[in-house]
Length: 231
Image (cartoon, rainbow, N blue to C red):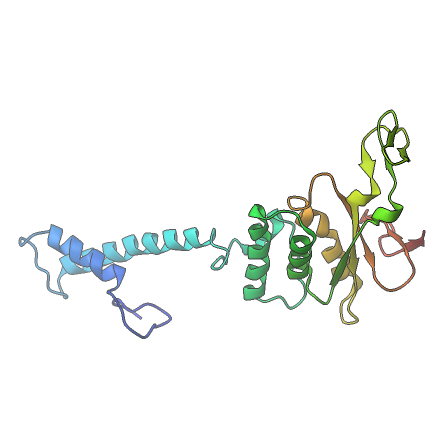
């Protein structure tokens, strides 16, 4: 566009372009010994210098925005890779930013069932994530090194570590009819990365499909990851 007009052109009130502010400062620093006419060589040189300095100023702002989850652009894919986020098909820039913000917002949150559910729903989509299924305390089993009898008559057998099935929960998923298996498995595979820093350290978890035969899936991508085995 030339001059001080940005591209694309913005309309509305302006507090003054940073290029113009820098140019005025450079021309003022020259004093009165040089011509400030817009058609002079001095003006042309200072204008070029002002544009170069302004470019670095804008570049610094753009770089700072890559750490702002509501404005991130170029670094978005990198942040998703760091936090193990797999964008679902058709995800927009806005929705991907919202998922990233949801992941980062869990840093100061306790790993409650509601927090975990909200996180998975944001990251996987409400059409894929169905619900969390916690362990049943009525039928819970556990082990204790050396074994122990809990007051009340409940005995826990000897084990190599403290463990309890109450500390396990399952993630119920559904594969939409318009989603290919490769995408569905990629979303399911992102669950450990999503929950790693949020779920309590003493918990374990797995995922299953809410419809179809009950079983388990092989996690190795080089193995029969499309096969399901009856339990």
